[in-house]
Image (cartoon, rainbow, N blue to C red; front, side, top):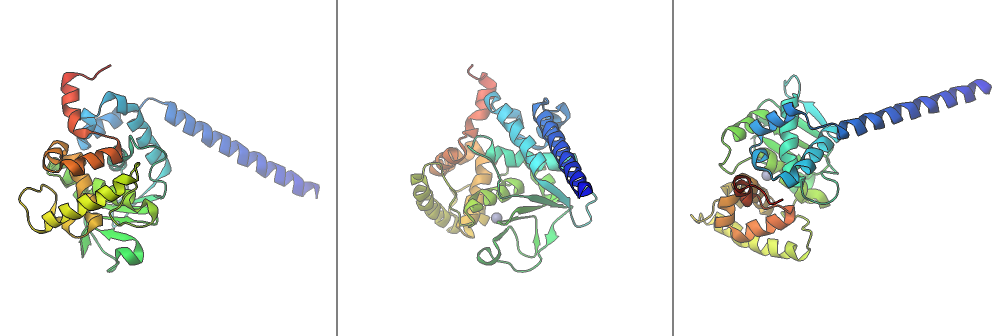
Amino acid sequence: MILFWAVSVAAVVVFLTVSVRSKMRRTRFFAAPFPRTWEKILLRNVPAYAILPNRLREKYHRRIKEFLSEKTFEACGGLETVSDEMALTIAGYASLLSVNRSGPAWNSLHSVLVYPRAFAAAGEESEAEGGLVARERGTRDGESWTHGSVVFSWQRIARDIALHGNGQNVVIHEFAHQLDSDDGIAGGRPAFPDPSDVRAWQNIAARELERLRSGDAGTILDEYGAENPAEFFAVSVEAFFEQPAETKRAHPEIYALLSRLFSLDPATWEDERIRGEPV
Ligand SMILES: [Zn+2]
């Protein structure tokens, strides 16, 4: 009996020591300055980082650290490992969406799966049945699941970085789906801070989606958005972050609503940087 208690007490002491140590490690990780090597990777792979207003930088760095410490990265399809550059790039784009939103970010997301290139779909899942929102049929560059994972082709991410400014970005696209499916349904109806904006979004998105379907030359949104309201929301978010000035000009109502959803006005970032920010 004495032996039993001794073993139990020892187990509790070990558990507490491990948990205190991991808490201390976490505190040190968050207190440490943002590594210079990480800044260099972000400047290379996440162009918005170069013009991100100073007032958002600390929050942005914290969001990235939270993402890297809380999410699991998994190499798939023959990829040897998810490199620091890959993880940081994905965390960098995800954190653009979350930087100025209140509360914790990406709560229902657990893992990020990375394939070296486009991957074969396991089957013909549908949004209603499996919570899956696929970017393509057959082979896919990205997937977002409502039950805790996102999947990417690194080749596609690298292509989007090289072609920055064309309005397409698979990481932003899939994280827009994650945001949209926070309530368990990816229906193109995200949770706006002001509930009256939900109805406004639905009305404006329905009208703009029809414009996209009709081939209206005035729209700058990716035609893939014509698939359904969920895809329309995802391509709008891509355009908002990748071509903010053009989106504000061509789709002012969409831009204004997304600006309120993210509490960001990225169309002004470049000018702010040039003029110097107000103190
Ligand atoms: Zn999609």
